[in-house]
Image 1 (cartoon, rainbow, N blue to C red):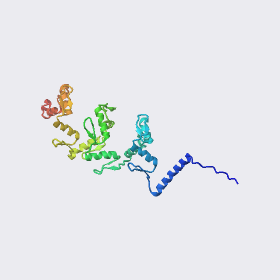
Image 2: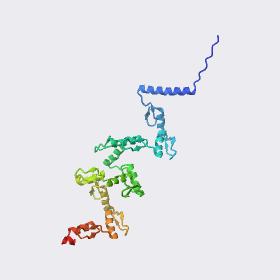
Image 3: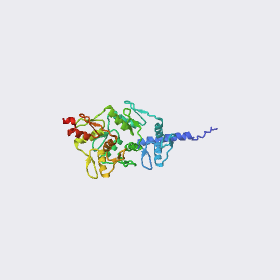
Image 4: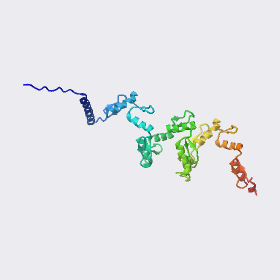
Length: 321
């Protein structure tokens, strides 16, 4: 009696790959059963992942391996997802749009942060003063106002800032380039936010009210400086003599007494002054300008104090009559 020989069953590559995939599914199922949510662990930093491909991608951080290169600028990335997002910088694509105002963003987290402006949500609160913010980075910068820390320093003038973005805006002042022009008065600005702030002057928008005298201001910083007149707070102290001022600008001007700095030069005779107002008053000597006129006799003066004396001391012939 003859028996038909059973063909030999060879395991091919497809079967092996299928077995591997099944093995991965089994390992994931076993991980869920045993409670191990992230069975794939990085041997360098100990960070865990639920999938092997995620661990492989993470390992590139330690190895420095960067496989995905931008064809436009040559910047390289550790995974294709980051490259795809980066390409929006070149294509101008902004797929995440605010349904309330139409503002668009490259990244979804930026849209989420923007939406808090409309909802009024401020989930990040300062532990020292209770002020709340829409973003952790803004809170971090705010906390530095309490600590006095300003880690970002301008290499050209030594001025320091609480955030990198403030430093970046400041650096534009050294270039002399003012790309943002007001369409109402032709005044130019180096930073877009300064132009936006300036436009409130033309619009007459003054949303900030003084709680003491109800005077209104276009800018919050100006309100804060004004309220110090009522409170008597002078937080800016001179390290040389101890004299205090309500604003940092006033302190900076005062410090020129100690340093001898005179940054304002007359374009006619090259005489220098510590204050801009002093320069402006001096230049009237050269121009002959006399903008302050007596309403009674019509006599003009180059400086307002001279007009004031002319009227109060009754040196005006019309008032003397």
